[in-house]
Length: 500
Image (cartoon, rainbow, N blue to C red; front, side, top):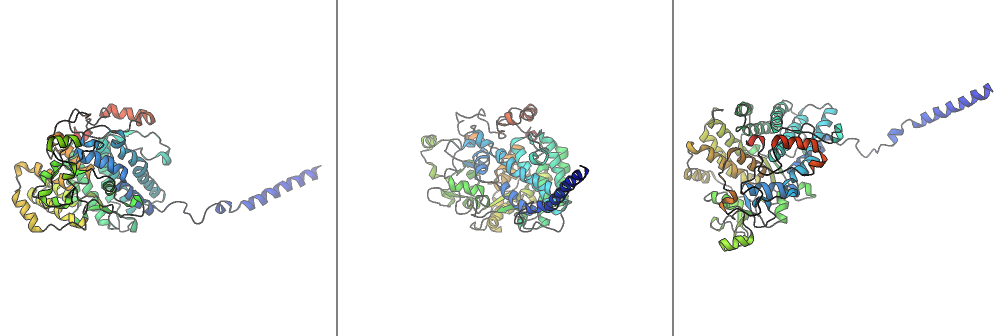
């Protein structure tokens, strides 16, 4: 009996040993050697850069239909261009939120998680932190309080209902992130995955400091002390110094949609947008006008043919009041600036010169206000031929003539600085909308001075933000309710923190 038990035990042990030996390498056998267990982080960078530039969906809706019309760069008689009429289309107004979180935010948080896991605290991490600020600052500027500290952590930390952080806290953290990120930039690069600066780490450093200056100046209405402190720090650290430093992504016409300029895809699909009358009227006598605009009916770029479309008018109202049709008006120049292979610009050297002019005007920086203003105008004009191959070059003499006809006036310096900022941020509509709300320039009239559109939801006033998705009230109810209690109702007229 004992012998039978020993034999049985030995037999079972032998089977187990054989089984254990058989299992050796089993996990390796189940790994496809042709597929990486983790994607190379550089490939992820290329993806997040393109995702942030954006597809047709959000660029059509949040950028052009809403932001560009609110800021009176663009107008349209088509009533689905809701920002032109101050009407509420939730799918359009929430589009950056809807695309930003599952794509841009998720991807950048995943990149930072992977870099931490790999122990990479150098250049790649620095760039990731800078780009994270790019993503979140556009979201918070457009919507206000947003998920930030817990956002994009569903897979990483299991956080499915992230809290909405106060915009003040977000701004303070973004500024600190930019400062810390520059300290991580070294000599190594992202290689071909760096779609912004093609491996030039020095330009990333300048961009981080330039973003810091932009964010610092965003605080002038609500926190001038921090605005001055951070603006001074940014300028001292070294910002963009020429048009060679412009932050942009050069797009292509293929092979897939993600490679194409999202604005360009809109202009391919939609023939309705026109340059707004407010914008064209300001550009009279400006050598940029025939570069930026062309008459819809025949493509003429003769400045005498370029008329801006009044805002807030339907096709019928336009014909009744002016006896004209939409094709009589100028549209964004399809031979120069609207291609699917056009660059998507995030920040320009000209903007930095205008912000430095303002900082000097406020006494925060020992710079020459007039010189920075004029440098900004020159850079804004001459960057066009660098960015768009079909754009005519604007000569130094043309710039000088323009400035001589409009001499700088210190008594109206803020107005002049930010009217030019408004021009240079054409097609960077999120930034144009944000800077107008902060400065009040240009001095826009609702609907460009036209009669109030009957179906508006703002009591005829210019919107101050876009709206959250109403679905947040059911998918993330506690955090959403807390944000509304702190910031105000989910309306276009509710002001974000820095716009108080």
